[in-house]
Length: 611
Image (cartoon, rainbow, N blue to C red; front, side, top):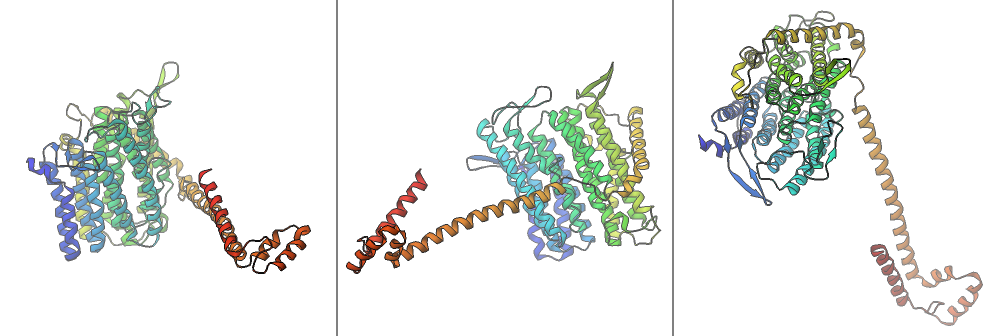
C-alpha cells in the first residue's frame, strides 16, 4: 500500500468539487459523500510514512506525512464530512453551498496531513479564506459576522506565520520538524511564572496564532459570533474543522506538553461552559461549548503524558461526533420552528421524538454520561490531569488540591448544567406546541452519528488502536471510581442548574469580550483614521496652497515680490519697477524667477529627505 502515500487525501475532495458545478444536485452530493468516505478508506489502509516532497522558496513541502495523529484526523474529518454533506443535502442546500463546503474541507485535510510548517501555513490560510466565503454564502447577518471572522483569522494566521518564519530561520530545522522545543529558539527566552519555565518568542507567536483558531479566552469572540449566523447546514460543517485543526497544530507545536497550554485549556473549559449557560440562542450556546471542549483537549496536550495526549485526541474524535450531532439537533428545530432562540417557542415535548433523541444522545455524550463516547475521552484527560500533572496547591495543613484537575471538573459540571438548560427550555418549558419532526434523511444521518456516539462509548476498544500514544495504556473507564466521578459531575451540574435557574432565566448572552473589543476597534479605528485624514488634509492644503502661490508668483512676479517688500522700501521698489518695464523691481525676469523657485523647492525637498 506504499503507493497510497503518493496521494494526498485532499485530492479526493478536490476531484469531487470539480464535478459539482456540472452535475445534478443529487449526483453532486452523492459523489461528494463517496469522496469523503474514500478519505476514510485511504486513512485506514495507508501505512505510516512520508509522501512526495517538493521544494518551494528553498523550503521543502511534504505533501503527505502519515502517523497516528494525522491518520486519526483524516478518519474523523472524512467520516464526519460525509455525514455533513448528506445532512446538507436533506436540508435542501444547493450545489454552490456544497462546492464551498468541499472547498473548506479540502484545505482542512491538507493542513493535518502535511509534514512541514510551510505546507501547514498554506493550508491554514486557504482554510480561512474558503470558510469565510462559506459563511458569506448565507447572506444577511452572516455577511457582517463573516467579515469579523475573516479579520480574526487573518490576524491569527499572520501571527502563526511570523512564529514559523522566526523558528525556521533561527533553528533551521528539517522539513518534518513540526514542533517548537521551548528552549528559547527563535529569540530571547521569555520567562514564565510557572515552575521557572521559559518559552521562545517564536513559540509565543505561533501559540497565540494557533490560539485564535482554538478560540482561546480573549481571542474567541469570532466563534459564538459567527457559527450561529449562517445556514444550519453550514454550521454543521463549521463545528468540525477549524478548531480541531488548531488542536492538531497545538500538539505539533508543543508535543512534549506545556504548562501554560494546560492551564489555558482548563480555563477555557470553565469560561465556555459558563457563557453557554447565559445563552438563549441554541447555536450560540453550542458555539461556547466548542470553546469549552477544545479547552479540555488543550489541557490533555498540555499535560504531555501519553494518557493526556491520547485522551485529548480521543476527545477531539468524539467531540466532532457529538458536537456535530448537537448542531444537527439544533438545525432540525430551527428548520421546523424558524426560530433560533430557546425562549421564543414553547415546549416541544415529544411532538418531535427524532429531534429529542438526537439531542439527548449528543447532550449525554458531551456531558460525559457513562455509555456515551464523551465519558471515555473526558475521563482519560481528567485522569491525566489528576495523576500525570503536578499542580497540587497546599491549602492548609496536609490538605492540598489539584488545581488543573478541579478546573476541568468545574468546566464539566457547567457543561452538564447548560445541556440540562437546553433540554429543559426546548422540550419542557412553556406552553406545549406541536411541530413537525426531522425528515427521513435527517433522521438517518443524525441517527448514524448518534449510533457512533453510543458505539464508541460502549465499545471504546474500537477506537483505542487508532489513538496516538495509547499502545501501552491500560484503560478501565467503567471502574467504580470513574462511575463515581461521573456521578458527582452530574450531581454538580444538576445543582448548578437548579440553584442558578433564577439567574439563568434572566441572562440573555452575558457580557463577553466582544462587547469591549467591537466598540474599541470601531471607534478606535475611526478615531485614528480621522486623525490621519486630518493630517493628510492639512498637508494637502499646504502643498496645494504653496503650488498656487508659486503659480501666482510666476504669473505676476511683481505683485508677489511687492507683497513681501517692507513698507519703508516699497516706494523705492515701485520707482525701480516703473523705470525697468518687463522686469520686476528686484531686477529679476520671469524666467529667472521660475529657476529661483525651482531651486528653492529642490533644496527644501533635499532637506526633507536627507536631514
